[in-house]
Length: 339
Ligand code: SF4
Image 1 (cartoon, rainbow, N blue to C red):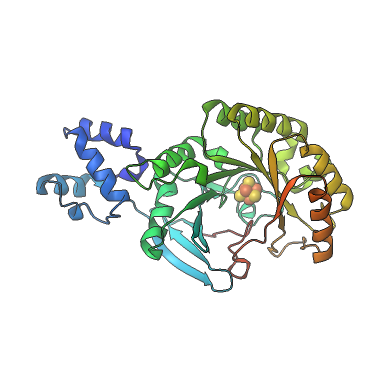
Image 2 (cartoon, rainbow, N blue to C red):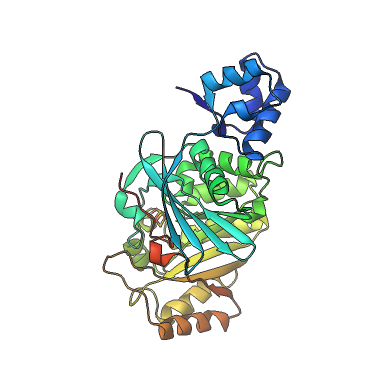
């Protein structure tokens, strides 16, 4: 099997070149051509001697995923890509365009083990983790196809990123490398359902990408029903790990709260949410639920507005986020691939 060079950080690529009898500086040349010139074949790297290009063609590849399908939402300037992987499994990736801001929402697993009740990906169960190269190539593939200058990455697609911790961290290293895509870590956001030990590890390792917590309920009873991970990590433990992160990283955290009709959208819920997060350096994103054909519904505009006003009157930084791409099932919680 060919070695996928997208699996390597620049340092690892240098080691790979040295281990195959090549000079270290060749690794930097190849890295730059992969990420800056977006080559599809090593033959395109004209700065390399012909024999090295041929050697690479035989032993390695600059990625191995393909676009199988594209759904375009003209209403919201959103494109959902179905990417085909080398084992014929597929994943979804979304490009969201808002003026100059071009955001790619990437997947980190095929399916997800956490089975959150409001999420289509959770209905699939977990098939497997993505490799670092498969995570990275989703962004490269969209850059090549759309010709857009990608400004932001959100790790909020299929999968729980902290269940594929090492590959996700490696992908962030690759995205932010100034010899490659050079997307600053402050423009990358990882969203977790709340894996408490991983939040602490992330804080300890000092990764500068942003952190977002999918909270969605303010009592353990409700959270366990919506998010089975709540049985393992109660809200108190989750909040303690978030406090630890905000202090250690000296950064704000974002809480995502999906509003579901009659489940977590009462004024009482909003007051409890304000109390729970009031002394944490944070902002809250309220996301009206995107239907996925199960028993849950989106609250009325009036209820959403009331919930929002309770938080904003408590001096909490709160945003109402209407997900993009609902009409093509590309919105939060709607990503799924059955193959
Ligand atoms: S919301 Fe995230 S963590 Fe929960 S099932 Fe969906 S992909 Fe997994």
